[in-house]
Length: 254
Image 1 (cartoon, rainbow, N blue to C red):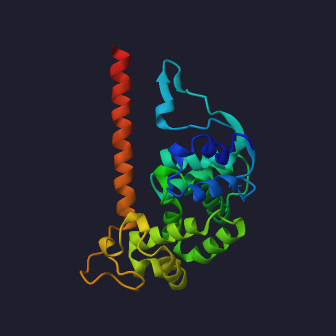
Image 2: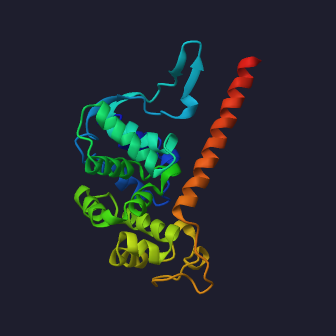
Image 3: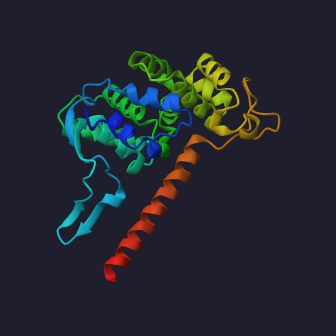
């Protein structure tokens, strides 16, 4: 609908979509993407830009500001956007989803949590600050790799290259052996063949991997583990939020 995540991307695609290929951008926008879960497809009133910079503290407590993108849209838009701004780990995302489902009196089994999280990750995977969302979901839930792949096929991701890229990111983050164990050897090899040397704009060798082979590079250096990468991003976000908070306090004192 007007105001959906796809609409938001279309309105500000030059700021939001991280793909250089214009055709990929257009396919992503035109595809929706429509949420697949019942919980994610509920129509709600969404703030549309719910990040730390739009939450202020006044004499009456916390208040939200900046409603220029407020709209009626799918619940998955606010949920998915929260991942990139408020949840710094997979555990936080799962806890957030579980609490949301329970609060809205919807089924909140581990399977319900997993499916809604994938819905949110899929709908947000084109956003610049969270390109690795789907690969993180894969590596954290390795025993459900087949379910993840079947899910992507069912919801028909706009461009297969997006799926390849997510799997390739999982390969880069954990190394081929670990990614193969978690996601499935065939899926990893297929993603590696299609993605080739294009993952993150660097060669497999620069990431400490051999292209298309099932082990670390000859140098024996493994890329940072996914958990370490997420921790570094989390710390950077926290530092930026703290810097913004201090600036706001200083401006308020002047």
